[in-house]
Length: 277
Image (cartoon, rainbow, N blue to C red; front, side, top):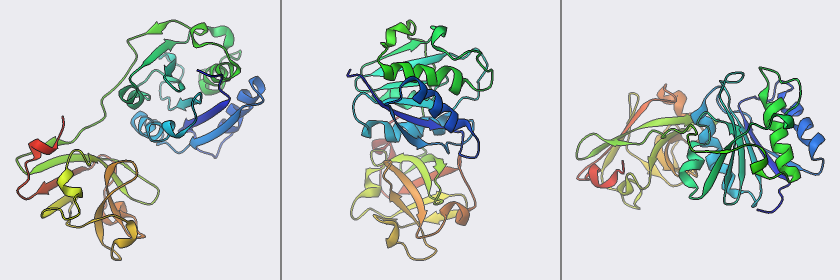
């Protein structure tokens, strides 16, 4: 892998405090020539699944050699391990709490190392700001050209979880869940085009999508196709079925949020043929 100089940051720190600026200061102190790109600092606080979803949607658009720093760390100060994941084109630095689970699922060739080389850390190490004192120095020295094997031994027992998948209810219905609500109020489900291909055909069979107490019977291919106040389904850029409203917050209209069940019923369709478990 070529010596990287591009670093990305994905965190749940927000922008109201000094955290992100301090992390960048540490990085630039080690490798002043680095380019730092903010992917997102509005990951839902403490939400490892939201962090995993966020980095999984962005990482592959960056040039080879990019180092992705992913910090959603409710276990900061505990015995959870700092790790380096090396994939074919990228490095990832994160706590070993499952936040890289969707990367593990997508990358065929990878190695994971437990960082134990504490001489790279800033001293003293705060119990509450490992992003500054542990993870940023690791990223900085990786960007400076230190080989990953200098940081610690390879491990195979890293933490990973399976993202929730839609499941068949009966011969015509599958049930999924709202994974997140974006800033526009669109409800992003875990149902993909592969799970229910009939739903996304140019002329789908009669169907209904039920979320909360609302029943939806329209699929559009653009947000602007919806009538004012109309709830509809759309295949979003993340590859998932979204529940949306034209220039409105669908989540507010429905009155539900993340974790809500979503069912899709297709008349005459066999959910068993559509859903992959």
